[in-house]
Image (tube, rainbow, N blue to C red; front, side, top):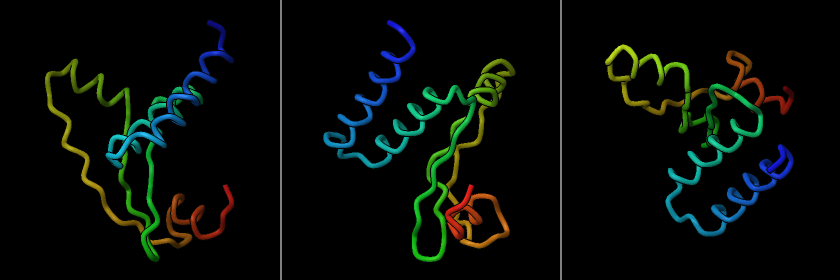
Length: 100
């Protein structure tokens, strides 16, 4: 299969999951996995807007996961945390201004 076919297949999987997956955590994780695959990214994160804050809900990093496995250490479980929607952080700035 070519690169374009692979990308269409990934988008199709996400589309099907959007209509069939009832577990929000699994769905958000899949969205980040597939977005990273489409963009060839080593890491990715996803936020949900809640009022005047962003809730950091998905974090993935292949390099850190590989290093953890190689060293035999266990990565700390990711713990979501709120980020104010303001110009003080990159994600807050984007949410505040709608600019990249």
